[in-house]
Length: 257
Ligand SMILES: [Zn+2]
Image 1 (cartoon, protein in one colour):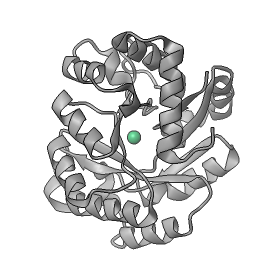
Image 2: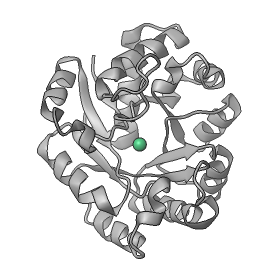
Image 3: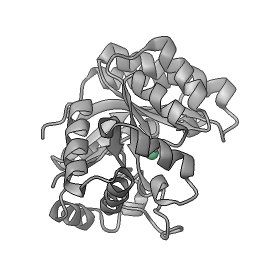
Image 4: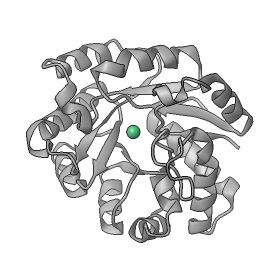
């Protein structure tokens, strides 16, 4: 069995004490690849250096909507220049998107998200999209631009209707710890009804701990529990789900299997 964590922040300081040991344990358990999204100009170089240290680490370059206010004025120009160098291991633009919990939605977030959608289109790269309480606005921007390579709506949370619309636009749904919570009924129902090919596995670690582990550091090892939960929601054998999702991840991000 080979699994990919399509979204984990392995560069965050929470992993400083045991990063190498954690990656070694992941390898033993069949977690064979990781995509590390960036959050802004402050961590692009750090993530690139980390990804260069291990062959199973890939990364995305982008500006996270919650960190829009912390960016230098010419952040898009810097991002374009860096992405144009096509550094080895770059597989997507992101994470970018909209976060309805933040006050910045009307201001910087919308413009910066749309600029990153356009950059992904120019670069022929998929997008890693952060959409929190903003699915309808994210859909609007994606529909307006129709990025050909699509991408993933990371940590998808929403209705079946929204899930279908993202999928129609060429976007997969990132499935992580959310589905382990009983109260996430709407999302679990959407996941149950969507085709397996429309889903990708992720942990968003160190954030988004699974049900029962609230307050603890999340790690890519929890991918195995997310996989079990997903297989049980879909009523399919774990090995089958693992194989389809591994193929989808490789296909979406052009990873070598
Ligand atoms: Zn993230």
